[in-house]
Structure formats: C-alpha cells, structure tokens
Length: 267
Image (cartoon, rainbow, N blue to C red; front, side, top):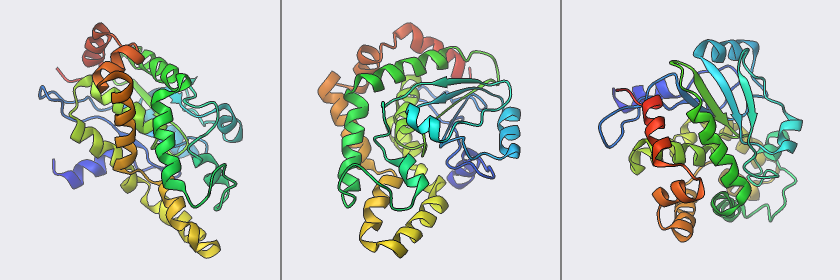
C-alpha cells in the first residue's frame, strides 16, 4: 500500500471528529503488523454527531480512555459510543497543553507568555515524562490495552487535541509492540496532516485578531519533532532508554509485553 493510500485509510473520516486515526497496519521490526480494528487514537469526543457515534460503535469501540483533566471533562464530556466503557486517566491534573482553552476562544487566556507557545510545549513534553500523574495514567492505560483481548474490540484513547498526551501514549504503546522509532515518529507527525483544516481555521482567526500570536498558537496546535526529542531526552535522563522507562517507570513487564503482542499483532 503506498503512503498516500495508507494515510487515507489511517485517518478516519468523521463529520465532527478531528484527528481520529487507526493504528493498525504498522510493521514491527520482526516483520509482523498491527491488527486493524483494535486501537484508535483521537482528539476529543465532545462534539461528535450521532452519525459519528454510530460509526465508532460499528467500528467496534468498546473502551474510551480519556487522558484529559477533570476540568476539561466537565467543560466538554465525551459522547461515548453505546456499549463502550469510559475510563478517565488524567495525564495532568490540569490541562498543561492549553488545547482545551484554544478550543473555546481563538486567543485564549493562557498561563504563560502567549508569544512563547513553542517553549511552553517543550516544558509540557518534559512534564509528561517526569510527573507522577502522567506515569500513573500511562501505566493504567496499559492495563486497559491488556484487557482488550476480544477480536475486533477497539480501545480508543484521546485527549483534547489528540496530539500530545495521546501522542506519548501512542509512542509507548507502539514501542512495546516493536514498531521502529522512525515509524513511531511518522505516526506522531501525522497529526499535522490530520488536523490541517482545523489548525488553518483557527490560525486564520488569530491572524485577524492579533497576527503577532500566529506562530505561538501554531506551536500549541501542531506537533513538532523537537517536542518528541525533549521527551526522549527526559526519558534518557530518567531511565537511560525508552525500553528501561517503559519497564521501570511504567512498570510494564516482559510478560505483559508478550501479552500485548498476542493481542495486537497479526500472527
């Protein structure tokens, strides 16, 4: 399958859902590939239409893992597909990414210099690695993944924009299955394609109100290889390697990794 076709199959076409993506089809270093209809990653579920909810229900979504803070959940609760279990696993006690604030107004009330979005995001990625709340959330995320053993049952995991907290969740998950880092990075950066129209619309409005903020807000709304590099550096400082971090900090055992491979990889 060529790349254009693959990314089309990967990005789900929902009426009101942004950045909904299938993780099936990725190849591991051992030559196996991830099953389709097992794991989805996405932005928020609060704006979904009835048709979108039905689509996700028919797709097989049985578990909805929400990485958002309680405040974000209160502002915009998930619209959960019928028959799906809802699991709240806040990565941060409050939304450090600022994504939820941008959703409400174009030039948000944010807790840092509004012209410094890029450096703020670097801090966010470091915090996702070193803060206990984040580690606990990602450990429990693995518990949900391990419980998803029925064929064609889907775990969907998300935050507000589906790119940072969700992005790191995808990094940890794909790495445990043996997907090579360059492929994991490609999946991470695919957010910029999947959210392109949404980001362009927001930036157009920012441009009209305060052009000096465009680049800073762009940094908050998109993903950047350097964000991932900062997370990788924090992982190396904490544990020496991503492998050690997953095993020692997220407490995912070799036995659990074997189970994940049985559940998510084609034989």
